[in-house]
Image (cartoon, rainbow, N blue to C red; front, side, top):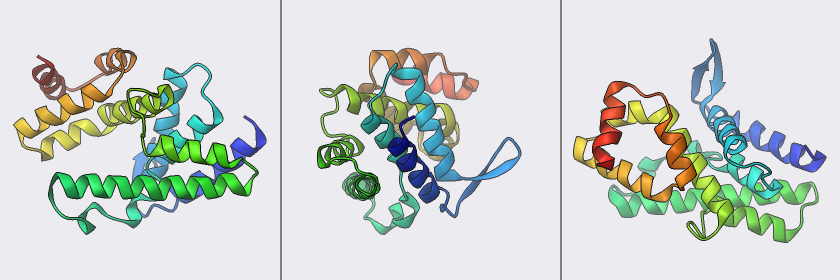
Amino acid sequence: MAKRLEQVISALDRLHAEDPRSVDKDGKAIAAELLYAQRMSAWLATLAENPSECLQIAVRAQHLQRWQVPREDYPEGRVGYLTWRRDQGIRAGDTAAKLMNDVGYSSDDTQRVATLVNKKGLGRDADVQALEDCACLVFLENYFADFSRKVEHDHMLRIIQKTWRKMSPQAHEQALALPMSPASAALVKEALS
């Protein structure tokens, strides 16, 4: 890993590690957001043979400091959710850009990371697609089962369908190969039929 890339990833991870929520990983507590970021990078390593430094940074910055602005601070419903998500992306992109500037990345590179984190060009930009695929696969692999128990059945089916539409064919293959509980697998099968 190039020195400046390593410096940015380390700086992002220090910020992730500030997440007050922790989860258990292999018997040890880890900041929830740091674990999410590590999972994002792991999926990128699976999906992309030689990802650019900008993509590696954007993937690692995907949920940067989300705990600082809770979803509950925004209105209920789809518009409130989309506004919250947009604002989170802008904050994460700006913070990643500052960290990149600090170690000598160009303004073109910092703008590229902001574009990726904000998922501008989904379906047209291969790097944006790769980031979205990572996010969808991390969700399906690690958070889907618990989330689906909290959401009304028909709404959950729509969420799965929307998630599926955002994914590439390669990510579809990966998703279908994920180990799932019988209940989760049945939900996915129903949503996709």
